[in-house]
Each structure stands twice: as structure tokens, then as C-alpha cells.
Amino acid sequence: MSWLTAAVDWQSRAVVMRHLRVYLRNWYTAFLPPALEPLTMLVAFGIGLGGYVASLTWEGRPIEYMTYVAPGLLAYATFMTAIFQSLFGAFIRMRYQRTWEGQLTTQIELTHVIWGEVLWAGLLAAMYVVIVAAVLAGFHVAGLITLKLGWLPALLPVSFVAACAFGALGLCFTALLPTIDHMNLPVFILVLPMGLLSSTYFPLEHPLLVTLNLANPLYQLAQAFRGVLLGGPVLAPLAGVAVLSALMLGVLVPLDLRLLRRRVLGD
Amino acid sequence: MTILLEALGLVKQLGGRRVVDGVDLRCEAGQIVGLLGPNGAGKTTTLRMLYGFLRPEAGTIHVNGVELGRDLVRAKRSIGVCTQDDTFDGDFTVEQNLVIAASYFRPRPTDLARRIPELLARFELATYASDKPETLSGGYRRRLMIARALVHRPRLLFLDEPTTGLDPQARMGVWDLVDGLRAEGLGIILTTHYMDEAERLSDALTVLARGRVVARGTAKGVLGDLVGEHVVVLDAAAAPGVAAWLAERGRGAPAGVLGAWHVPVSGEELADFARAFPSVRYEVRVPTLDDLFLKLALEP
Image 1: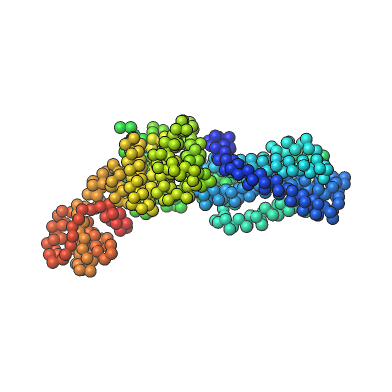
Image 2: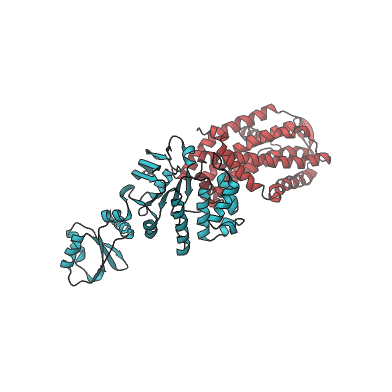
């Protein structure tokens, strides 16, 4: 069994199904947060801040601020859901609930536990994106934003793959940080800068930031979603998402395995 | 007899230190093998290699005829594990824990609709089926851990200190369950710090010290080989010459427990002792596995 083929083994699916089963126990904890978050964001940033920024220029054409923000919300939901799940959710399962240790006494191996966490981050993020998309569709129907709604389903596989990569990134910190209190470090060093400097909520045109963002998968994701939903360049950011996600998964999953083998198995 | 576990020459280094050094172990169907040793002897590392949690650097492990290193997944289908700490899934109820555990095995355990109520009844967990495991008492948590380890009908069961922290009644309840599993033909590898538990339950003992097997066999045989035929118990302060008497025989300081010395001796040494200390008051008793632990702990 190689680390890569383990992703499609039944054991990895069994781990994902376990997480899904826990998630679906309460519909209100499962579905309300992802529905309320974009509502709040659209009200705060769109109607609130948007009142001051009536419109802005994107790809050489004027665009309503709320419309600009909407695709960014989908990218941001992908990123935040995946990274927080693999940081806090995985850490709690590993350290406090000892779920991983229980799984490892069965036919599940550590590679499957890791792929299970990565794929679960992807699946959860994709489910969140569906709910956020439904909220955005409501705003579109109400005439508050203008999106190419028919393309929304096409974003799901992209969101899933990118979220898996974000999940693999989060797991590195789960493997390295000694306690849950230390989670502040990746949150402030990585998550917030990546999130705020990704053109999710406002365009960033400073040449330095634009250059830096070429390596920011969240920026590429936000640009790709914007391109699809607003009608703009799609191929370049989509290729950026694909390349960066493949790179992250190819490097980080083996690294996660190595770090967690030491941490969980003591080996 | 069917051999369910055969481990040969297991070696494992952790943190640059060889913690298991050439351990052999064997368990047959319907047999309980007690794996004993003081803290740091390599019991848990050995156990973790045997159930596939860790990979040995050298040696082979066969479980139910399948070599663990060659086909880990198939070998683990025959294994049930009850870890020392509670590792049940706190997100699920008692009953759901059994369902989830079953989902981690292929071929899938059959007839779960009957198997799970049967396990709940047998381990007296039916009343708590809808409760969260953390609401259970220590004894019932252990029952859940063992029930979960059995959900897929394994042939070999690993019990890592299954009664640690339980009150005497709960311990005896677990003993009965373990004894019943042996009667059904399961092979069981048991580690414990409770000497009475090891003596009562185990058909054979393997004693580890500093990562090596230092004795194996029945409890009586192991004690005879490693401790001696008798143990002399005397007040340490009342017999100043005893340390020198032991030193003359190339023996180190005796084990001290609450101001009393516990000196393992052979029949011949007991006669010598009686001649050497005619006025000292002492008691002679049969050795126990506690004496073995004390002896192993004192050895350099």
C-alpha cells in the first residue's frame, strides 16, 4: 500500500463515513453555521461596507461590491472550513478523544486516518460551499447580487480538491503543536494572513501582494470562483488551484504521515 | 491445538534505545498468555507490535497463520484489541460504538443485528446502550472496550491491563468475562500489574525485563526459576547481619517493603539462614509474582 493509493482504500472511506455520521447527528449544528456565516458576511461587508464602496472595477469593468464579495465567500468558506477542521477537529480527535488510537486497533492504518481527515476536510468544505451557494442564490433571486448561477455546481469539485489541500496543510500543524492552546500560532501566522490577503473581500493590486498571491492557493481559488461566477478569466487561476493543490497534497500528506507516525505511534 | 500467535525474535528501538530485544511469544486457541514485567520492561511495545500498531525492526509475527508484515490488513481481521486507556469513540453512544467499530473491518462482520444486542447483553451493557460511554463507571467502560474488541469475532484478543483502576468487584466481573472468552476458544494475550490476576487467569506466563524474555512457563515454574522456593520476611532493623550474609552469597540488597525485608531463598539457603540467625524472628512464605517484580526491579 502506498501513501497515495491509500486515499481510495475502503479504510479511508470508513474514516470519512465516521466523521460524516457525527456531523449529521444535529441538523442545526450541521447546517445553520454555514448558512448564517455568508448571511452575516454579506450583510456586514456587502450592505455595510458596500454602502461606502458602491462599486469597484474588476477586470476592467465596474461591478457591485456585494457581487464582488459573493464568489470570495465561497472560496473563504472552502478554506476556513477545511483548515479549522484539520486543525481543531483533528487535534481533538487525536489528542483528547483518542479516536485515532481506537481506529488504529482495527484494520485502519495511520495512512487511512490521515487520508480520512484530509478527505473529510474536503467533503465538509464542499458541503459548506453548497449551503453558502444556496444563500448566494437567494441573494441573486432577490436582486442583491448578480451571478452566473448555472455554474455554481461546477465549483464543487474544485472546492473539494482545494479543501483537501488545505486539510493536509492544517494536519501538519496538528502533528507539530503540543497543545490546543498553540493553535493560535498557525491561526495568526498563516490562516489570517492567507485569508485577508487573498482578494476575498477586497481586491489587492499592490505589485508585491499580487506576486506573493501567485503562491496563495486561496487567492487562486477566489479568482477562479470569481471568474466562473462573474464571467472573467478562469483558466489561469484554475490551473493555479490545480497545481498548488497537487503540490500541497503531494508534499504535505507524506509529511503529515511522517510527523504523525512519530507523534501518534511514537515510531 | 491451533496456534493463533507466533512471534519470533522481535526487536524494536524507540528513541535510539532498544526497548524490545529478541522477544518470542506464542499463544494457542483457548489459552491465556500473561505478559508480565516491571515498568519499562517493553510489555506495551511488544504488545503494540503484536497487534500491528508498531512495526518491528527484526523478527516475524504470524497471526492465525498470516504474517503480519506481509498482509497486515488480513492479519488484523483476526485480532481484537482492548487498549490500556479508554479509546472508545466519545461522539457515539455505547451501542453506536459497537456499530462504528464493526465498520472498520472487512470482510464486514456478519449478522450485526444479532451480534450487537448479544454483546450488549453479555457484557451487561444493554441498559446503557443509548448512553455516552463517558457516563459509565470504570468497570462498565472496560466492559465496553472488551465488547468493542470482540464485535468482529476475532480469534485472538489483546487485553492491555484490562482491570487497572477498577474496584475488586468490577475486576472480578472482568475476570469472569475473560475466563468465558477463553472457554470459547479465543487466544488471549494479557498484560497486567496485578499478580493475583496473572496467576488466576494465565495458562502461561512470559516475563520481560529490559526488553528480553527472562522466564516463561506456568506461574509456579517461573517463580521457582526466578525467585526461589521460599521468601523469608523479617524486620530490616532487627537483622543487621542479613545484608552481609546475602553479600557473601553474591546477592544484592533484598527488597524492602514498609521496613520489612523480603528475601527469596532456596531450601538449602533457608537452612543456612536458620543456622546463621537463630535469634532473629522471621516468617517464611511461598513466593508470589510480586516477589518476582521486586526482584526484577532491583536488578541492574
